[in-house]
Length: 127
Length: 110
Image (cartoon, rainbow over all chains, first blue to last red; front, top):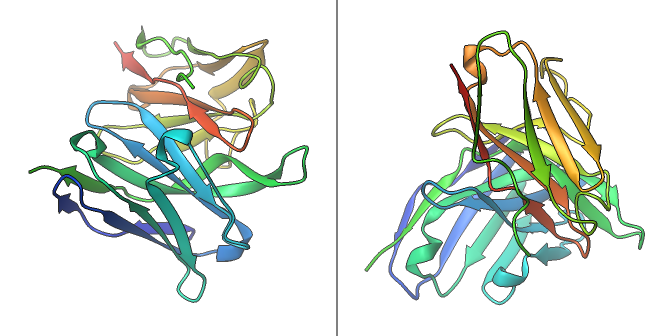
């Protein structure tokens, strides 16, 4: 079955970086994108960005653009998300989620809904 | 970019119907037929319930339906069941290769 399995919980100090991994199985990895979504404690979902696993093109929310790096390793069907310069308000559960390919009017690939989701990775930022 | 607007909570009795609204702008909800809805039980990952405004993934009961009028999308759950109690989030494509979520609605089954 289609499944995304994420790496384990992390505790980081302010200013550090964190990398979360997401291993896909049960489908052709390069036929779907991977999105990253986070959820702070008791809060709602926040879209961070996506990566086109076929050509490694990325797009991200403006607030993350200078701190977020998304990569893939097609040999292991794994997507990674690295967030730098961590602050206490980055404490959240981080999810990866598969995205089906749609095409914007420009012809660029976009991902507009997410299924399935990984189990989530808790990242705690604390001094 | 502000989150889409959802009511903080809705409630209904078993067997009843409830509707959750999701209001955006012409730049997101009103501009694209790319609204999706997610159900999230406590401590669990979100689950896709509706995509492309009104399409149901396989395995999602037909008690769940979606619609859109102008800048507002809606999720209707008919024949409420106890297991429907959860948080629900809407999501829309917002142009310029970005996506935006709603703030979430807590559904209570009385």
